[in-house]
Image 1 (cartoon, rainbow, N blue to C red):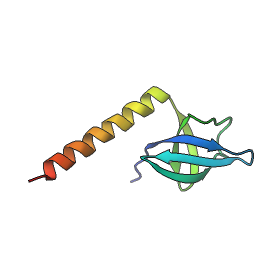
Image 2: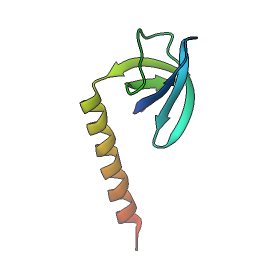
Image 3: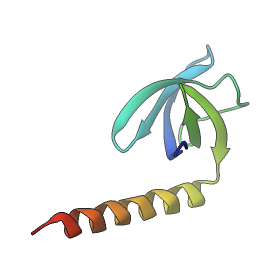
Image 4: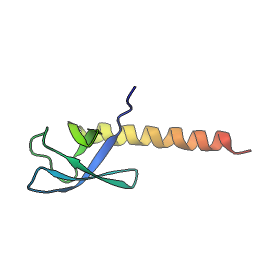
Length: 79
C-alpha cells in the first residue's frame, strides 16, 4: 500500500523538474508527467515523479487532517 500526501511545489525549472515541500522536507522531483506545473501548486509525488495536480483547498484540508491525527497520536503517547 502506498500513502500519498500533497506536496507543495516551491520551485520549477525549465528542464521539467523542480522542488516540492512536504512537511518542511524538500525533495527534487520530476514534473515530466504533468503539464504547466507552477510554484504554489499541490501535487502527489511517487518515486520522484509528480503524478497529479490537486485542488489547493482539498490538499490543505488533507494536510490539516494529517496534522490533527499526528497531534492526537502524540497526545495519546504522552503518559
